Image (cartoon, rainbow, N blue to C red):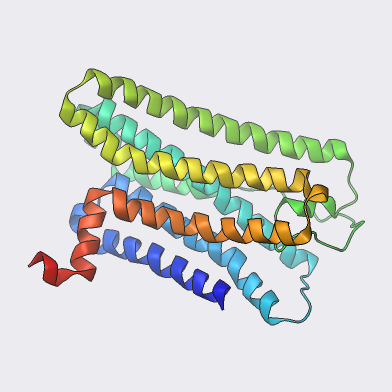
Length: 274
């Protein structure tokens, strides 16, 4: 019941903001389009995990086929990587808006936004190969990087996969941090209005970046120390993250983004605004 309620909350909270961005013309700007894409990505990410979890909680035995596990693994890391890419695109959008305001309309065109969105979901393609299995027991509640412990492959191959993923994550993180550092420098040297605009639009993105970074760090940490944690501890920690992160995005953007917050108040409390 708790898992079902959590899933419904995630779908409703994310979908509400996406709906508002779609129907409100003043929200048809690159920044809000990227926010909508990020929230859609959260819905897809949660669906890839929660549907199987709900089935497992209702079943006496928790069983999943290897192809289905690979499919969940693929979707999990595709949407996780897509979130980093979307945050990178949002950082670039804020950089152009604040550091090059006169060129914003010519740089961030509909074509540019469409290409960036396309690349954000195209690039996170994980090469998954069907390998001979040495283990048939998955030590986790869903198919994340614990899948790498199942095939009969050498630790060298696993290390290569891990290093490639780590390098990509670090590069995107450095790009985002460099972009916001540049925004901070330009804002500090500009007027109070520019600083206020930068704080209002960049702070939510940075909070979401911290959230996804902690989520990714936990994903790496849990597989490295899985032998040191009990099954119950692993379960509780994983469930908390699966609930916390997909709900964090709509809460942050709903409360911290002024225009979205204003439309949410009009949607749910129209009498108070009249």
